[in-house]
Structure formats: structure tokens, C-alpha cells
Image (cartoon, rainbow, N blue to C red; front, side):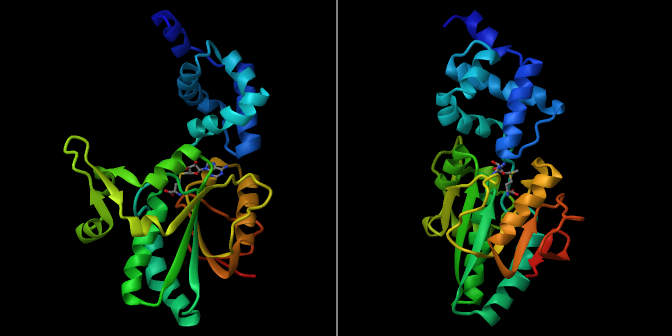
Length: 285
Ligand SMILES: C[S@@+](CC[C@H](N)C(=O)[O-])C[C@H]1O[C@@H](n2cnc3c(N)ncnc32)[C@H](O)[C@@H]1O
């Protein structure tokens, strides 16, 4: 392949029509808003895909996406490219404090012999569900009878495979207290690119699987005591948000808790939820 050819791909531009087709497809199938303002981002992220597929321009790419082969194989890559996976260990710590100080003690009072079931919905590369395992593992020292399970889902298969590997650059865990780092992470021997890996007993507590919030209903293996769905809904319009939260509530036990991200609001939506604190909700029926 000549340098000119690569250059041509690198500079490939999305026409109005190609952008409209892709943005409508992404919205209808994944709920992700792709307004004009995101056009340059979409174009530059997809340019990489064009290069990988050795396609010359976006017309060929759009034709491929809408072909039978593309629908089977490419759509999954496209969603990896368009979704935003930003996340962190112990992101929005108020939620982990509430879980530690309120929810789990109450659960252990009321149902000490049951398993506390948690769903990390939109789990990205695993930092959120592994933070939950750390918190729950610490709580087991206070409540030795505490049993828990964690189900974690995302739409992106690429990000899920990162989550399953549970290997992170060492600086990703900088903010975690030293004793927790020592207890729950293994350090690589590589001094140039130091990484850490979540220890196996914690990795084994989390079941990862792919789930699209646009599915008509969510076929999770169980009903949960607690759902984390944080910093995902912001990418959807209000109607889609309401629809997704209603489907989440169907998988939540009565009196179960839902945590949303700090900039997500449900004001004005018809939902079986009572607000306990900003971003913390309880299922009321
Ligand atoms: C910004 S991350 C949030 C990660 C984590 N919950 C947190 O708060 O740190 C949003 C995640 O939602 C996922 N996502 C986007 N659209 C989705 C959809 N339609 N169904 C399921 N997951 C989706 C993305 O792949 C991404 O990993």
C-alpha cells in the first residue's frame, strides 16, 4: 500500500449524507446521540477503521456497514469506536460511602443469609465493578457472613475484554489508599511500563457480559439489590433515558437502590423511584 493511499484514507471526509446515515443508525440501535457537533470526532475515529479495513473512502465504509457482512461484523467495531469509556477506580466516592455505611449494614440486618446482588451497568473497562469488589471485600471483614455477587455489562466487546483482563497502567490506581493497593492488586515487573492486575479472587467475583441498553428488555440472570448505572445515560436523549431507567427498575428488587452519575437527572420522568440523595434512588414498588 502506498503512502499516498494511506494519506488519502487518513484524510477521508464524511459527506452530509454519510454522516446522517451513520448517526441515525447509531442513535436508533445504541441510543447514542450523534449530533453535528460530534461529526469531526466520529470522522476521525472512523478514519482508523477505514485504514484497518483498507477502504478508500466513507462511501465504501457506509456501504460495508449496511451490508449483511457489515451488520454481522462491523457494527460491533463501530460501537467500540463511538462509545466513550472514561471511567476511574472509586469514581464518585459518595456512592461507595453510602453502600458501606447505609445499604449493606441495613441488608445484613434484614437479610443476613441472602446474597447481596449488584449490577454494574455500563461498566466500561472494569474500574467500577472492581471498586465494588474491593468495597464489598472490605465489608466482609466487618460482616463475615456477607455474600455478594457482581454482574457487569457493557455494549463494547473490546472494553469488556479489557475489563476481564483487569490489567491497568499503574498510575490508574494512584488515588487508592496504599493498604488497599497492596491487598487487591499485583504489580508487574516491567519498570518501563508498569501495570497492575486485580487479584484473582476479586476478578472471579465479577461476571462480565455484553448488554445493549437499547434491547427491549434486559435478560439478566437475576433481580438486583443494587444497580450502578453511572455516566452512561448522558449519551442518550431524555426519552431514551426514561425508557432505559424503567427497564433497569424492572431488574431491581423492591426497596433496591439505583445509583446514577453526578450529572444525570431523572426530574420529571415517570419512574418507580424515590430520591434518597442526589444521584441515589430507591425503588418504591
Ligand atoms: C463513560 S463510561 C461509564 C463507565 C462507568 N459506569 C463509570 O461511571 O465510570 C460509559 C459506558 O457506557 C457504555 N455504553 C454506551 N452505550 C451503551 C448502550 N447502548 N448499551 C450498553 N452500554 C453502553 C460505553 O461502552 C461505556 O463503556
